[in-house]
Length: 408
Image 1 (cartoon, rainbow, N blue to C red):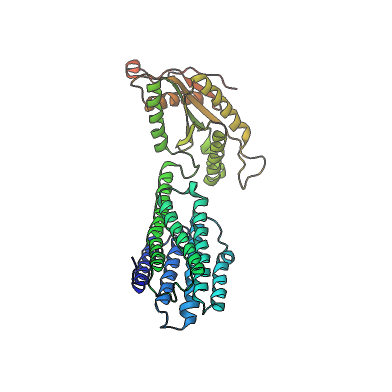
Image 2: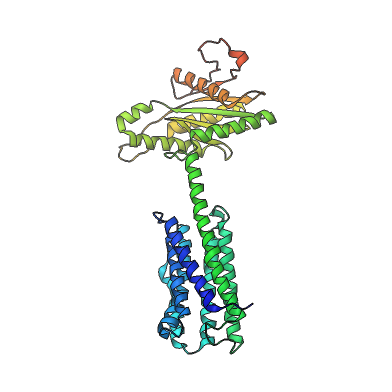
């Protein structure tokens, strides 16, 4: 099937302008996701194809020289957009080198249509491969499936342009002008139209999926310390408790509280207090396993969830954490000496669960042990050996039911 070339050029121009406008609106105020560069590339694409459509109606220096320069510059913008999306520095001189090469060649061979088509098609096809390789280079860090739409469009464009370049060199006299209709011309412009729509939509989806992922992460993490917040902590604990009940595996829980944290805020100020919180979190995270979860339960209190862990193992780890925090001394900006001395009190519960046990019972048990650790002088570990099940503590008093462990 052979399509009317001016009609296809008009379709490419209109679709490029519409996609550029849409991406500019979507990317408004979001300067680091590459949408602005991509929209600018589509605008350049529209102008470049307009100059092609005006062949023989405008001077050759505009239609041929400037037109081919703009078509090569389209992929400069696309690659720059991908670089910005990935957070990489944009080497503009390197990106612009192929466009400069295209301009010089077209000026020299302005009267040789086959040579121009062959060289320009090869260079732009290689630029499409460059964009494709750049996108795939960090594919594991890209969320969602938009990347594969992007890759599909760029891959098709690269194959068609390089194939067109090879045919232009090997088959003499097949075409004499860009506006001449042929099967090869049809395939070339259909591929361009495909890139404008499919690859652009893929890039939009990439940006949207990453924004959604960032929002999901922000909703699950404490913004100050970077560990799980209370909501995600309880969700993870609920899941692990259900698994422990089902598999009859042990599970342990620590409640960790920074001793006299109010004095730190009063003496040094809240910014320093924030640094102390982050310092304690770093000590905790460095000493737990990959499957364990550290989170901020509230204020200066943290929770550590230890799946498949018995009471003795959890108590030993709690003692190690307590000692590690004591010797670490939080070094903060604006303070003199070796840093701020910080200690923590830890309450621990661990063991096998029974049917009907739930996450709030574990928190209550570990919290009772934490209360006992503070009552017994702080900077120590206490353990709770039993859960308070409804039948066991109906009418019970306020004294926490724990088995204290000695401090050091």
